[in-house]
Image (cartoon, rainbow, N blue to C red; front, side):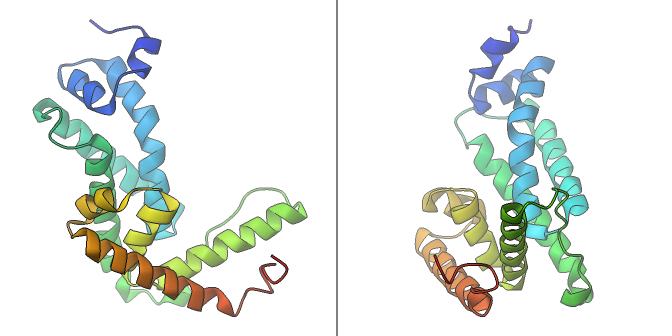
Length: 194
């Protein structure tokens, strides 16, 4: 028997996944509303393509639902597991796409109307996305998870399957790569006066 929606919303991801594994559809709905935006955001930042990001997020959530019946509460954080699946799926797509030249990859689109602040923010976001796409995959993963998703180094280490020192190194090298990639565009992006 399902709990009321507000009671479900206060439960942990772990508890919701276990409940879904026992057939609680409301738990699945709450968990999907909570985690799908996270999966989509990480996939978008990794891939730079909204359509591919949606496919990856959907596949990651399907894998989560398949894992639910055998989920062992407390064994791993649901979000850590999901981040790892999304990163792996995105990495697989990036590897398959290597035959496409970087210049042929579509630019991310911004559908918002054109206020100056919105345009500047869109230019900055596009420049960051383009700079992220130039980084080696592992550095991009580490930077996205650390600085765009806000994960702590130990959780990133678990997601990426590396040690904390490796995460620190990947993040540092990725940040240096971003600075180098964006240095020539500081003035164009409005950072000279900042």
